[in-house]
Length: 435
Image (cartoon, rainbow, N blue to C red; front, side, top):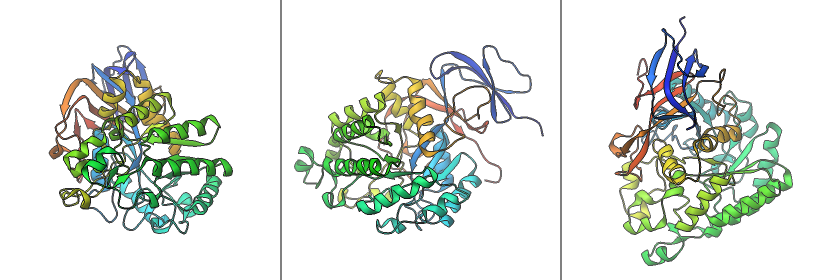
């Protein structure tokens, strides 16, 4: 079989040195000036930034059970359009991914789609009900080799169950990813609690509901000496608790979503359910605290919390609408807008927060590696000379619930390489044989 050879010419590696990059048979073969290879397909990427392929630690793929909203295949296409080479499939499917059989099904669907790696996340508790632990050990030992467990969508609110889960996953160096939401403080909540919720007559979602669970769980993680990951942090108070915990050496990591880095609760004044999300959009002061925490490393990663919904679930009254937004295809451009354009981070830090660190937390050994000769050729290329307007009718996701419709963003992902093969070429998702 002939080797697959590609040259990326004139790109800026991590936004610094301009180099050519030669890919041979799935790996980076050479990086340098003036690389030539008569057998290679050449892509001119002058003006583009080359990053390690992005890794999302928090994606809702919906399959099995809610294929009307998304499938593993459509999410994979959306992922590569956004520069991702690995997605972590949350467990709130139907049936719930709380057994080895279900996580293996999701894993196989990802392999069959073939655009990127799909790593299933296992449920912490049976049926996401927060009472009995799921088949954690069986999922860890399965073909899917699950290392991240989460009831996301629900909080593991019982402290005894959370303690037992943290103790159990120590056996195989796993991590519990907690949806920090004290349920008794958020019954019927619709948006951030504050002046705007009071004015609109929508029941408020207090910051303390998130912060109380974060505080409890970092203490539990410290007590049992286990790994804890906090999903979608949204409040300045939550940031301070995580900062305190890290200063004490507690094994805690945290994520922020692109939409919580940009959007604020005043958008609810439109009563447009596109802005209804769990956890809710917060205040501008929270947004700035999240940006600063991502920049200084208190928050470890950006994760999309890509949450597709059918039009019927979002095109209705606010109180009846589902929580959630899609975000795979816009994530990198939003991070550019909020963190790079504002000079809070450079591209090497973006690479860490969106590739290296999430791969490390998830224990995805073949991802997030430095761009050096011999490394797997998982790559994302973003053209900084291109501005683009988000159009919900052109997304690869099966759902259309993007909050950015009509936004003009700088930086377009034009190429995504997975295992050395271009899955996105000049902004177009590659066609697969037989599809």
